[in-house]
Image 1 (tube, chains in turn purple, green):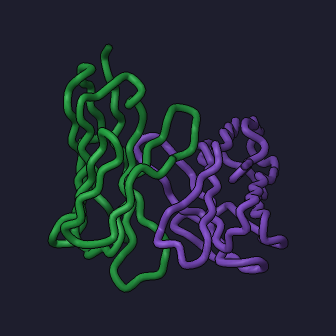
Image 2 (image 1 turned 135 degrees about the vertical axis):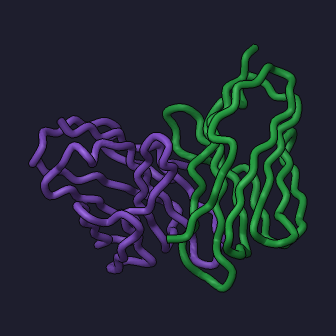
Length: 113
Length: 112
């Protein structure tokens, strides 16, 4: 099983450029999440979705947008990248009724110059 | 927002040693989870705890849900080189159907 797949795995951007990270899950999960991981900061929630067509803000949503047009996909967009958005981004999903376990992708490393 | 205090931040141990790390909070949780992240990978669930006082094992790993519901401990016995990685605790607040709150992680290094 593929589980949670993130693309691309690595990307370098210049300040001001835009890009989209794609997360795809093949487990028919309702909930999907985008986190960023920075040294010493742990995992911080950017945005999440409780089902197709829904999105909500997490702890650090500024500078990011998301869309969940299809149940299996959750897109994270950066409209105008900034060096502060240099990070490793993780997508995760879980089914409804699950008591908390998240299934994570392998991460996408983004560098903004 | 709510915070989990995870300690220690990092550990350097000799192969064969036992390890203990913990998470505490001022809030009450109804779920505690422990994840491990290998270098270059996403976190993977190790142990899930759902009841106060619960003690659960997964091989050489044992985790406990504190009786006050405000803390959890993860123990690793007889560490081996492949235990290297970052260990995260995560919790779900009591009465909440909401998102997990993550600790900042404990980075474990094991000398062969």
